[in-house]
Amino acid sequence: MRNFFKRFIPHKDHIQKQSGMHLLSDYLHNPNIWHLHRRSSAGGAAVGIFCAFIPLPVQTVGSAALAILFKVNLPIAVVFSFFSNPLTIPPIFFFAYKFGSKLLGQQHQQIEFTLSTEWISNTLVHIWEPLLLGCFILGSISALITYLLIRLIWRINAVNKWANRRICK
Image 1 (tube, rainbow, N blue to C red):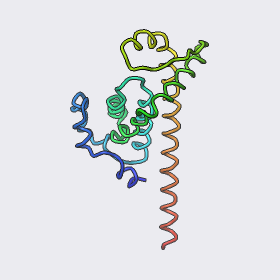
Image 2 (tube, rainbow, N blue to C red; image 1 turned 60 degrees about the vertical axis):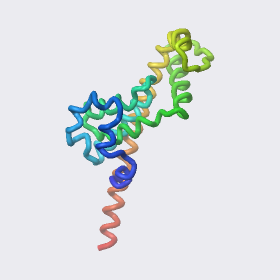
Image 3 (cartoon, rainbow, N blue to C red; image 1 turned 135 degrees about the vertical axis):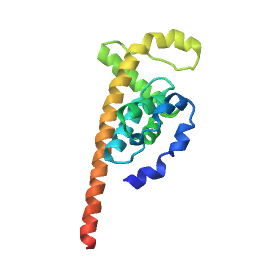
Image 4 (cartoon, helix red, strand yellow; image 1 turned 45 degrees about the horizontal axis):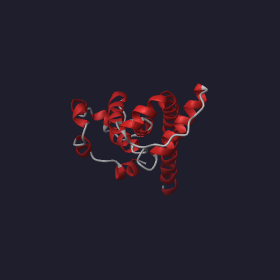
């Protein structure tokens, strides 16, 4: 499992050069956020998925800050924060808004998204509460599922490796 993550996570130097990371530069020297083991990998993935549900363009910096705070793998947190991208953002925030509206007992509105200051001042002002609630709850549930799934996959991989070692002897 470790080799799988090593293939896909960015190198320490690449992350430190990203825009916005200069805010966290004093904390990037902690070796715990670079270790690659079961707990730190699962925690990093969970932090990244949780931050992917933040409805602002600060997912990467947010995932890095939380990874440092919780001392989990920073590169994995950053990679998993890219779960929200231009293709996935509309369905994620649509379902988060519908879920939040249902929880708050509000009637959800038909909303057409356009990235403009007019849309933000006229539409986002009215939907921010259900959107944030839905994002927080769905992000928390997704983070928990991601954490447990990575731990389970890591465990199964370790058991299989031990079984293969016994067979080879």
